[in-house]
Amino acid sequence: MTDSKTLRIAVLGSGSGSNMQAILDAINDRALNCEITCVISDVEDAYILERAAKNNLPARHISGDPFKTKLEGDAEAKYISAIRDSGATVVVLAGFMRIIKQGMLDAFPNAILNIHPSILPAFPGVESWKQALEYGCKVAGVTVHFVDGGTDTGPIIVQRTVEVRDDDTPESLHARIQEQEHIAYPEALSLLAADGIKVEGRVVRRA
Ligand code: GRF
Image 1 (tube, rainbow, N blue to C red):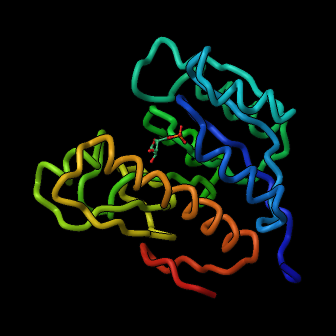
Image 2 (image 1 turned 90 degrees about the vertical axis):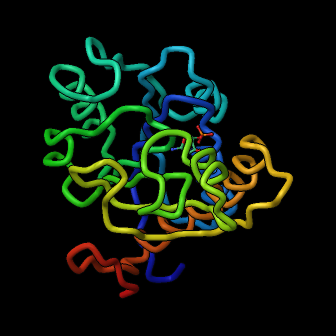
């Protein structure tokens, strides 16, 4: 970690926050040179906010209304202000269930990351582990990528695979994918913190 700078990140999530926890654990283990400057959820009672509070992280709910599936308009402006005020330079989407629109992309250019539970470009969108199982895939996994204007289409930073077993259910497969998510996100952030990647078009290379 000698030539690594402290990466200041805002974590956005709508659910349990297990990825936020994995990132925090890596920070506390000194495996990741990062500071979580704020945790924001569009879901008032999301467990990610409780986890953040338990760990003394600044946490707040900001509504995404009146939209249900995207972040735009006044709500988007509030998110941008809160993230900037916290001092974060990187935005980490960790189970944030809204589509990021141009305003946010312009506010944090090439600095928004997402985690998606499939080996992209296979199975973008929702419940991708279920899609992989129903398709009959023998391998599934997880992707950490930069966010661009599409849905789960941005340059890929890290991917990790899991084997699909004959007796897998959507739940058992998702659980094994999540184990890999908790390795993949800290790994991607470490690369970013260490200036260890360069983006050439849509290809991310180790610098
Ligand atoms: C993860 O499965 C992630 O891949 C997806 O949303 C889920 C978030 O889980 N984008 P958690 O809230 O981090 O536990």
